[in-house]
Amino acid sequence: MMNKILVIRLSSLGDIVLASPLVRALRTKFPFAQIDFLVKTEYADLVKFNPNVTSVLEMRSGDWSELQTIVNRIQSERYDLVVDIHNSLRSRYIRALSKASNKVVVDKRALARFALVKFKLNWYNGVVSVAERYLETCARFGVGDDRQGLEVFVPDQTIETVSIVLSKHKIERNELVVGIAPSARHFTKRWLPERFTELGTRMVKEYRARVLVFGGKNEATYCNDVAQMINMQVGAQAAVSVAELFSIIEVAAALDYCHVVISNDTGLMHLAQARGRNLVAIFGSTVKELGFFPTSVNSRVVEAANVPCRPCSHIGRSDCPKGHFNCMKFISVEEVANMVQSFL
Image (cartoon, rainbow, N blue to C red; front, top):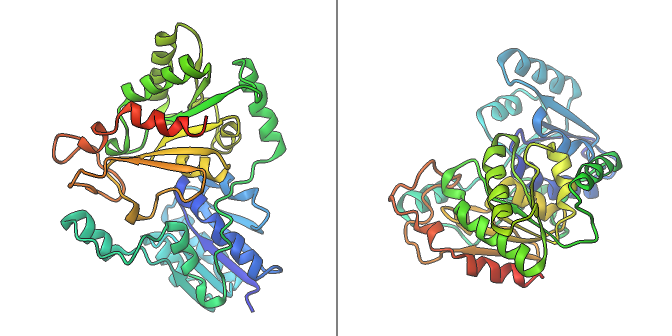
């Protein structure tokens, strides 16, 4: 019997959202267990409101002294099971010293990933999503996939805060709102910003939609530029960038206003899926075998499948190694717009 369980996933946004089916499955299998989650502080809100989680352990800096404090706390808890779905240097250290009765770790398919990225050899035995890989770690304990998908819980106070902010921009729930997430941490995951601008402009002109532009606070300039270009094209304040307005959990609440979200392969894509949004995901340098394609029935993927140099990375790159960037340039506005239209 597992009375105390610790799940370790320190970062990032998408990976933590993808862990939600595992946490829910653990709660179903062990309804009375203490289920704790270790995560970096900047992502803690994605977990702390989850009713399946007992408590959240936060890593603020990751320096040596803090790491020792976390290890000491984990050792004192005497966990029956530690589930390491990060498998980084820090998480391996914590797992090794945890004194847990059982320790399991995610299989990242590192060899198959290396062969596909470096040599374009597909050694994957089918397409298994990252969420499923996380669930695999606990399969021998009778933990299985309930097929209920991703989830992120938002408190009522956050919903009210977001409602007040968006109402100042005259955005209400009873109107058609299209969300776009044009940025990404790595360049090769970003569809061309001028195409996002053209797509947003079409949504406004053809459907009288409002456009919410999503991104992290460090992407605010990029997102603001896209919103301003849309407004210039339509001659009205139809698009609003919320990149510097909201925290992560507030972004989740703001996504609820969107009838459809168009996103690059980013954490915001997974967050939109977790909130049950209609989703059009644009994939450039990455492919489905890597495990990050959206899996919900109300999601669509647009990719340039005939570009032989894909994938050039499993996380994205700062530039196109071939210099042509065809994996994104070959995806037209018309193609994406048709996918969006299927939801409208």
